[in-house]
Length: 598
Image 1 (cartoon, rainbow, N blue to C red):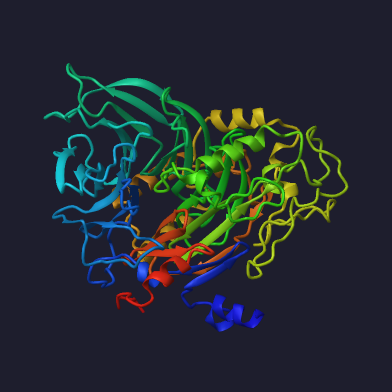
Image 2 (tube, rainbow, N blue to C red):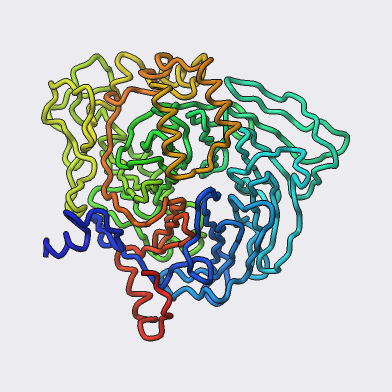
């Protein structure tokens, strides 16, 4: 049994082989080859120099029960299909809508989940030349074009999203480092906008548009130095997390445009960001090859994860695999009632997961086990899954190093279940407690091993989290690329040559280098709550780390029945969750199309 399992997982000399399944403690995830979406001819796209492939989902509440729709961009092309997921094989011969653009390429897109119906959907598409288009792929209409003359911003659109709870407001980020708030009802005007300062803070400014009649953009945000690579709204829509090329995570109160807190990458730019389903934690990934977990409440780094061998392009929480109570199975699929009213796609969160997580925080009197699952994909073509467990989230519970910290309990052993290793993850055990060696000091460099929970609050020696928060949000100067500038710049060039990211244009790269020369002082951020040293925070090891594609990965989305990934060749893959694979094979084994990519 063990030998066959190792063969399936790929061991020894087969380590470089692309995996079609992987095992976690909740079971086996399997790649459904018949559910692969791509360009109709299934020819791999030559992605050198192109913009990242992105995927967006929406549910249109179709009466047939198959209301899921998927949109993806490949090169100059944009496709809109019925998404059949684990239920039926993909039929690529019948896209609902297909568009080919000239002179510019689609870079990102987002559906409005509030207004989606079986007859009409509102899809925003951002482009490499700076424009934003509002289209309806069901009616096959193009209703509006924003920044058409490029008078607002001439740089590439990096991220576009509808403002949560709004039918008309949307936010657009550019590689210029600017972000703009638009209203679909307003025009962009025939002249370049004039701005008036609304708010200024540490390395960010917010301007309003100054004009006699209301026009777009309503607001202009300038955030950090270099490109603004991605932003994400908190689940309640009140806060905005921004990941920038200068290596900073900045979290704003969206309505009051106040800075809530900041974090600095270990080195290099931050490329991606996401929120936990309950809004308590933020995970980022970027050019330091790490995933970093940041506490929203304490405004500090609580863990880093090392598993990728190259830049991390996407991070995402899995709201369906969250354990909240002692002894809960890891697979959190819930009952049908839990999810019947929930839209399962895009960035929408599972209400039941959120309510159970908030319930956990109101019962602090008794120890309740909580585990957050998140994933990451990178330019190393690997998928990593991670578990964020009790011993990392609440480091005062297990035994910790001798130090003067009032919140630390002098327990002689960690509580049961706080850091147990978990079988079934193919040898890569998840986070484990290392409370057996309390007196040992940490080595200068943490190995790529299971996390060390006793170091979680090391940077808080004789300080409270309030002080940490104050330092984090009030640090006087922001550094950009820290730690061995020259070496890191060479590292960036190497990445660019091999992977042709297209994330930094030569112009913004020059700007970054200039900023580095004038502003960077690694000593000012490294070793502070803004950017703790590696030995000062727990180092997570991935539950699984599998090579799943030939080209760099650009998409990771967790759905109820499956996980969706996509690579730069333009193949959108569906991985059935444990126990969900039979849905497709039983229905389509006999008459499945012969379109499998070998």
